Image (tube, rainbow, N blue to C red; front, top):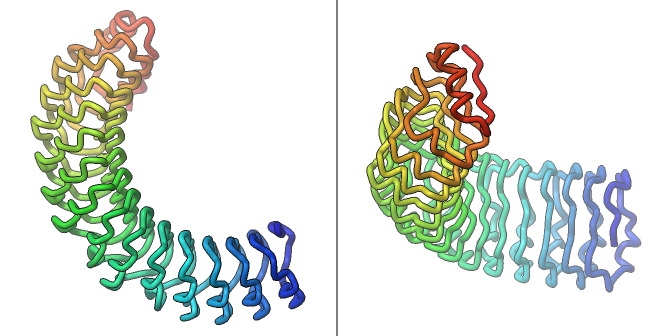
Length: 352
């Protein structure tokens, strides 16, 4: 039954007559409460209550024993009924964008959960019993107030997508390396100053977001993440990169802008899959000559560095389509020469 975007403020008690209903979509309405009769829809498998004004859920929600998908995203919930633990067939639960300050009691009993969203709440810690959710594949905890790595999280070995961005984390444990099935890891906008060596054990990782932290170095073990395609390290405090960095040959996008880099390792020329390279807002005066080997590079961002001439090797990037040079000490005659040497590339320059 589809009743989304109907401007509903209440639901009639006669709802309990729809006992054979499998799917109920009440999203994007103005509901402030749900009738007790909801608990009689025992054949319900999917319930969407997203974007209403709910401050509580009925206690008999737990009677919906066949429910598999439940979304109460974007409401005003500060707690959940204890009967939630009875929804043992749930595999997809979205509690994002509410006002939850505490882990909902009994949530760890929903052991069939594969997808759990708790993002944009007010959580400060998670119980170690989270380890019981061993079937979880997707866990979103971003935009909370977590100051430490949740104990037990390293036991969720089936996780493929973990988001802890926009929290208050200042360290990661070596046990992070246990999550070997991860292919998406979001850790940006925290207070991390270093990364655990066992990060290199996440051999299936394809997407890694580490920007907006306080990282001063990158562990050599990062070289083992050979499946990595997108790496965000911008807005940290990196002054150098390890020589082994070039072993990330499957990278398509590398974001290193807004750091303290004065040079790059020659091994970067081995990143032959790179399509976009972001190096703006550093202290670079040159690039390694091996950059000429990045034959798939299409976009190169070099703004706000110290380049007085076109870096060696850039002229040989046959697929380069866009080059940003704004904010470098380039003479007008030098800029014209660069444009002539790169006739098929859009060269953009705006003096600061």
